[in-house]
Image (cartoon, rainbow, N blue to C red; front, side):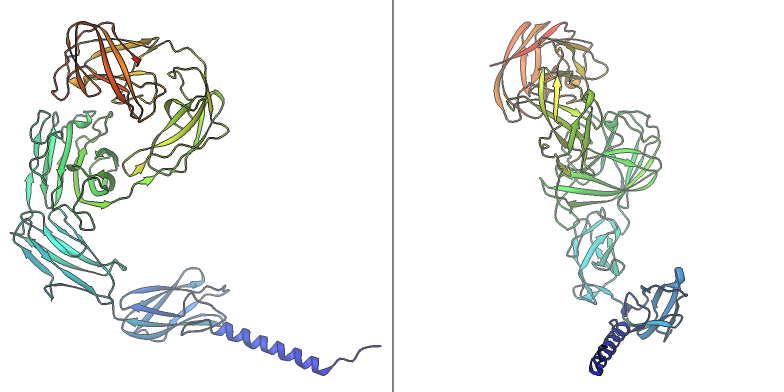
Length: 598
């Protein structure tokens, strides 16, 4: 039998449906703000815009017809449409007041209420009075400026010529030059386009200019190894090349006409020594032991490289915004035209150096890369460090956990074990080496399943290898030497005894050096060594680990107390430092050098 349908239940269902429709309708029409919508949605329903500024407005719902944008009062606000279906509109604030912007597509629409307000302004004052220019008597004179935003936003300060006039974070302007003109800008920290400028005139207003002096390697003005008696003055060291440098209007101009391609990297250098007036971007004086991020502009007529404070910067032709890092010492800015070991590759160029700024920087800790060693000792390195890695060191440990040496490696190369003196199977771990002062060498990698390396070959005889200062010293158990091209030097090792031959070594004390890294020793280890130097052809002096030693003719035994570092255990220089004497032991043949641990 069919049930009777109750009228009360039908009434209840209809009421519920009507309530849902009403709630949904109100939710769709009033999406917030002072405007509203009927079928269209906007990314904003109310805007407040500074007079003269513009703001995007966007239909965020799907449309099937073009969107038409209109303004209720174009004397206050205008609007223009662009984009697919004109879903994007640009609102332009014309005059102070209010207007309603409508976006319509077919029978659907949405509105946005736009209020145009007075633009934010900045006022710069001196002693409470507004100023657009100030005068300073000369170098080291100061003036305190103040600035206020009409909306009480924070203010930042900058100088367009920091080598003429500097400004602190609190608006204190200091004349760096004896005369010149600079523009000081007070800028809204939240809106960089809101600013006010003040012209600072120092002395006559003519920017200080002078020729940058030339020095040489013999202790004259400009030698980087001597203290600069004239801090704050740019100087250059030009030993062999035709370089003209001038300082004018806060810019260093360098012309390298006549520089020979391939000239040694140190032939042209430029130095600037910090003064008490040199400040970081926060207005604080440069302080010792602090790491700074150094930024500067370099405009050059050709591409090439410069080395700034030991950091290689690649330059493109034109204007370059450069970054290097600097741990504060005596010389605040040291630049070489070229790369050590490569040479000066900026030849016949003009360069302009300007806008040097220092910012305190916190060193970034590199993380340990992961790696595996596959067939034929090919190493695969996975490195999460996106920059700052100069190389990798693969450390090797024996079964007792004692480090027996390390090897500098690159990704996807075959690990060269030829100079690991002890055969066996070693546990390998890797670290990433920092490429510059802003990065700290990574910790050692964790032990993984693919981290062993097998050494199984003879090591009784090998040639002593040559290289730049410190080359190959990470390879424990090897002798390495550094010699300039005009010194003839050769050497080999047989059963731990190094035999070296050199002649024509009439160069400076640093022209011939011999290095040895003792195996099984870690940084910080202290121990004693008897160093044997035999078959010396004539009495003379050497410098061993910084200590000057006089060698007798024929055989010598030297007692050494060593504290292990990450570099060489034993460094022998065939000359005397710091006297910079010529080599005293010349034309030695079969000079024998070996050591025994005590």
